[in-house]
Amino acid sequence: MKNTLKNTTLILGLLFLALSLSLTSCHRTDDESDDLPQEELSDVLLKVTDQATGTPVVYDYQVNSSTNPNIKLINGHTYDVEVIFKNGNEDATQEIKDAKEEHFLVYNFPNSDIALTRTDDDSSTHDGIHIGLKTKWVVNTAVKNSSAPAQLVLTLYHEPVTVSEASSVSGNGVVYGTHTGGETDAQANYNITN
Image 1 (tube, one colour):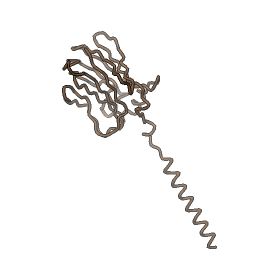
Image 2: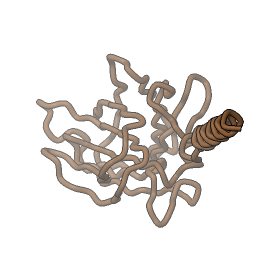
Image 3: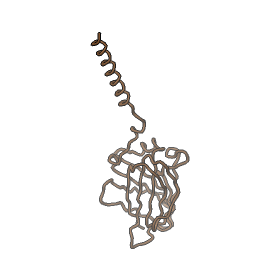
Image 4: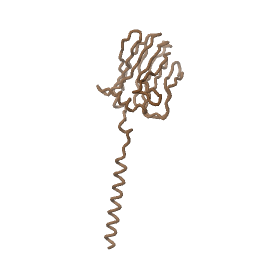
């Protein structure tokens, strides 16, 4: 009788343990399906359209490249700019739009006077916050100090805790967008010339 009780207790204990482990190991959140690690992005493209000509030019930053594309901007001109993320030949931009509440772009122009406005439509806007996939640039001065490089440092953040579309002066340029927390999904560098 004692052995039967011991065996029954042992079996019930093992079943309880196995059931507990299976329940915790099967837990999966929707966040896991949205992971877009930087390793999966191969290119960050900027489609820059001068409003004066209507002609788009695409600048392709290749992730981990040792060279940066040169974006030619004309002082006094206005440009419509669209960011496109690629994973090889696949467009990964839709993944970012599908998880728009988890992504935010910060534009840093360290040696330029460019006024940036976010022009995202509903597909890339949540709770009034524009991700920044579509923007308008008014170029006051493309290169402020010719003895220093003018650049755009474009950073895509994943799951930031807080975000703001506000701009702030940084050195000899302007940063559009701030965030706290989160991880960097992608960072792309472009040279700015005129």
